[in-house]
Image (cartoon, rainbow, N blue to C red; front, side):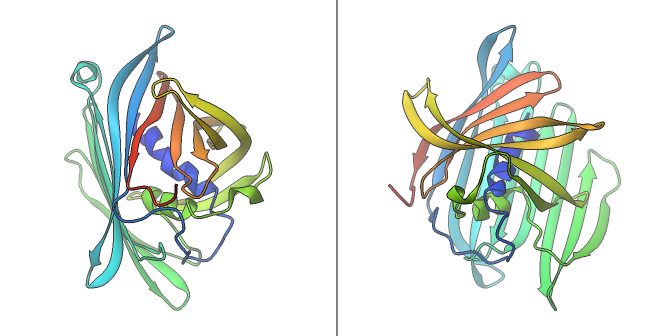
Length: 263
């Protein structure tokens, strides 16, 4: 469930990928922003709260240069632990104009524990990626990949996407992006579904949202993995995610937002 939740971030990237250059002017967030989510799972037509997630952004230093550090933590409740353990931490460092520098993910999902790391380096118009991946006690897998485009991990792409202009999208638009993870760097797609009003029944707030779906191939067909709702304003806050899982359906709802840059 965590992987799909993460895709929320990835999804957001969709609204940004249209702009090809790596640096981007940040207009959406500031140091000190903190977002909290509640996670729900559907069991026999009844929705149960199964966990929570938090995202935090701070300005800091990375190897002596000014940088943003953003992390996303997801965790299941004690009740949910009886059925499925969920403990994930994702951290990324970027420059102040959202160029990725470093990414790591530690994920405990059930009995599977994975560690991923991506180190970015730039030169001569190309990007070099040092990728590291390990599952449980298996041998560590390392590789170096060089690409001409601007790759992003899940979190850094989310940060970049939040500063893009959603009014440029038309319903059905498909956006391709290069996703960097510990195992590989590959192309992914997001589809813009249009605008929709969303009322969060748990906080009784209504939002005007841009709706996107992260899709994957299922044979010759495509299927939605995550549908996410992003506020149609300068903050571009992800306020809802619908997760289409192999073993059921899950949702994530924004519970609180502190330190938001724009009113």
